Image (cartoon, rainbow, N blue to C red; front, top):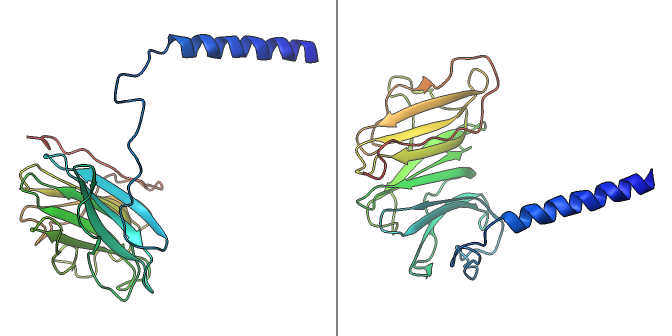
Length: 219
């Protein structure tokens, strides 16, 4: 038995070695990574990190930061080999802010969404934007169907994207007002107002971890 096991191990090793030998060597610039850069000037736990590269190659980042008494969402950006500004707290809130995501249009406007548990312990979907390259952000607003003020009081894990020209913002998230469903919404005025929410899939099954691709995002 052990002899057969040894033979199997040798054969497996030879197969793996042959497979690795058949893989072409990586092209120049692919096999190595640059030196690590710290995105934040905080010293406590940082998590829920998301990044978005705009059309000029600048990388914009958001994350949840626990440097204060409550978890908050922060922003920074990376250009020309380093982070080029101190991290910016997007919003002040008595609640915990988690699950941030962002996108950037071709004009450099930055759109950020996250979950805040101050308005509802189950999570409330918030939105803010920057029109000055991330130096400051607008007063947060709750993303909701304007005809239903109680909408989106139970949300989690939002994902946002936009048309390249900023003409439309698209948003998906986990909505569990009526069990876990994937919900969808969009804005045609830069996030000032949002349309009637839709469920992406009308099923009774457990739905989570949504993502999306926007057609023509690089146009």
